[in-house]
Length: 239
Image (cartoon, rainbow, N blue to C red; front, side, top):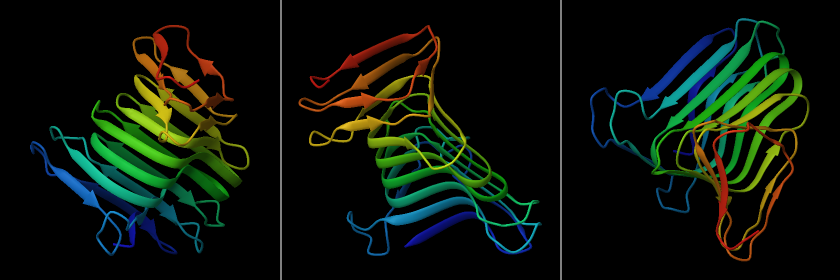
């Protein structure tokens, strides 16, 4: 598919969409590609969208690959992933998008977590919960706001995030990276990692929080780390 929409609200509608595996499965898998179906074909995904047209709009989407199953596996090549995109110009609207991921790989060019260009609220939440899970993002943007309120949250409970840029979007928003456990690292051996300002990186008391920087690569951290307990370490030969 070229475009995947979950919880997409048209004018004067409320749309609640959920994609999940059947309960009780062991080892279910989901593969996502663009229309061509090859590894170079990427699909765009929007989870939770409210478009212009009515104060009755509300778009709530959930892509849940973890609840009620054991050892789920994702293999996804995505162009743009947007969680919670509010574009309606009416005060009664809202958009909320949630992605719950277990094992496997989400390879995404651009991830936007929370967006609003209207007078209500756009909310995006991504949770990675399995040690076998990897989110590989060229650009990860938290909270893009031109009107209304925006909340963008990433929960790293386990697994790894590899990126070129983790950054704040335009405008004022609540931007939180809950680093409960797991790895944050460079995108690949040829690419540095830059973490921009304006994002709250909250470290849990019990977790091990690891920067993994490839040889010859540089990680630049412009957001403060909060939390005084747990373990913080760096591996890899980079700086």
